[in-house]
Length: 157
Image (cartoon, rainbow, N blue to C red; front, side, top):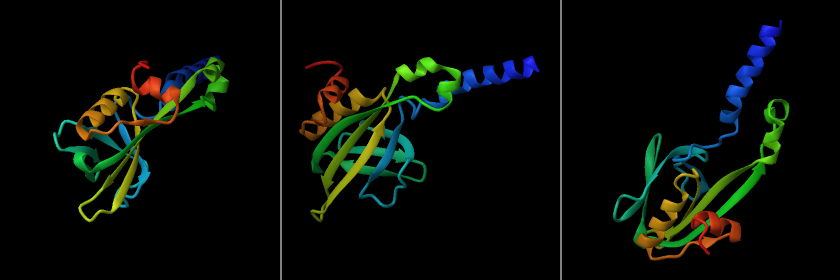
């Protein structure tokens, strides 16, 4: 019986970090917006490598946003406590925060119709995505608050 309990606890300790990890550090998720062809929660990769377009590749397609049509960039964070299994397995997880990083991109198409897309960015791509979008669009990102500004700019004022 003790072996069964020990095995279960070991399994929970192994799985627990994955259960609270959220999206991967280099993953982008479409949260919502005006693009009905993409389901909310679609995960994929965003790329700023194209000189003319910000591209979000997801399973089933891609969304291409021309840099010269972008008229709005906003960045914010949402912090939450790690709950659930953490209470039973690792109570110390209650003292850590899980941050989600959100980027909103607004643009007008050729018919002058306004579009918007909200993306959740993995923490490993936040700064490079913001810096590249600012450089290629000529627009400055609007930060939700000072905490978002610190995170998005790498701690710079």
